[in-house]
Image 1 (spheres, rainbow, N blue to C red):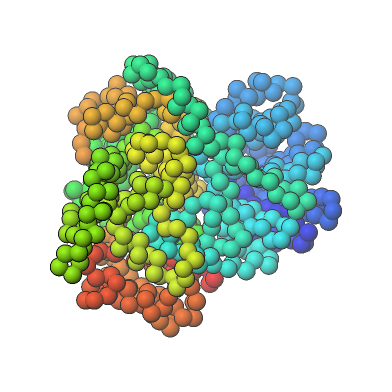
Image 2 (cartoon, one colour; image 1 turned 135 degrees about the vertical axis):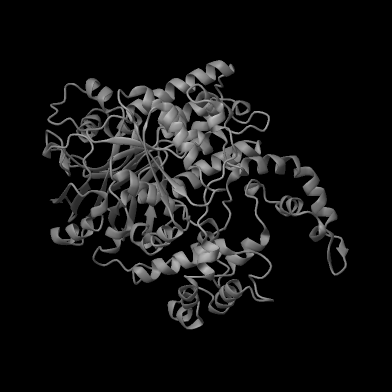
Length: 626
């Protein structure tokens, strides 16, 4: 796990300037750093840099940027290739000097060219410079575990694992994309390829970018839509076969992710996914696996006792830490430093705390991320199943509901769930169930009609009629890579901790597409097949309970200790000077929200989600002096 940055540019960026850019990511790689500049052709120079967190081959032989034995290639790379030992055997004619996976990527490229992406399996973001062709490739892993940003400056390109190096690059102006703000306020994150800045992009998950003399070509070597369509045509019809096939792939995935030259453990919340990953890890280990959990002094949210019981049953070396609201609140001020693009999922705070706890004893931690999206675990999937049953009645209700009644419409008198389904007539957003008032509120924050659609208008591209499957695919494309994985990457990297996700192994993901949906959602039981595997390791009574989760008390914070800061951020004078928001609307909205006043746009509903997103954006804006 590391941080990388670099450029291909006719504008001269000095080694010292590149070093400053690189060192903004010290937290991603405190063990080593490398900065190199090469002369290309047609006036281009190429700069590669890396901050290293040593995981495999802790010796200087793992230093980056790394060059191929023949001097043709140079790579700067962040991540882990889990099948590197298998590939190393296949590439045995290469004169390997190290035992790290980076050198295997170079050998794979020399054999297969950029098609080597089809041979490697893992989490990664990399840049490869090929001197023979003068091509530079940027590559990101299939599901987007590792981040990769790039800035297009005319015919030049600057890339980095985070936005901070780009913001430090000479000549970068940082113009805000106002049209994206309403979507961010509602969704709380920004999906690839967009970023908050004009001319700055995220390389999409499963993507390759080729840069050659100012020309760019992009393509996806792994795409959720295409892979699902292909794999789902070959279903595993037997439940027992599907269960055994999934179990074996999970066991291999966990074993592959336990290869490290540093201490390793797992995050253990006591839920199905983290418990299953921990159980398999313990099965592969000849000593107690170190497990980590944080608890809360709020009984209805606290799951630490369940995690402790699971750890005791499995024989793990368990560490738990109870945290207070004060400890969580103290992390709010650090959010923009480590989440250097506006990011408002407040579960980032407990994620940072559990990462800090784990870092005391390990450098690598396995997590259960991905189980909900690939195996139908979220409560929203119950809701979209109900919405599909209401689809025809909803259409009727929409038509009938237009009848005037008492100064309004009949539809306004119907139950909330019926109104939500009835009002959503857009086939591109059928599974995105939301009250129209939230959409309208977020859209009004920016005074322009030219805004990016707040909901994601591409559901029909998945080619499936089942609302649950469609929503799961949408979440794999958006929420998983751009919220869940961003949250854990930045939270763990804040403490120089590597997080690995066995459920998002390529073989596991692709096999999940072959498993019939009825095995995942069985008579209302979400994640049915994954739970069934977990019961092979852990007694049902330790796992079978309602999922609670923990919510940061953002409403109380925004109306309490953060109130004055929020009001300052939303004052008309501040907003007019900033020139991003509709100052009159936003100032009134936030004032109404804070004091729960009458008659304003935030009256009648708790708009804490939008208010929190606005606060996080303004905190980020002020931190970086944009």
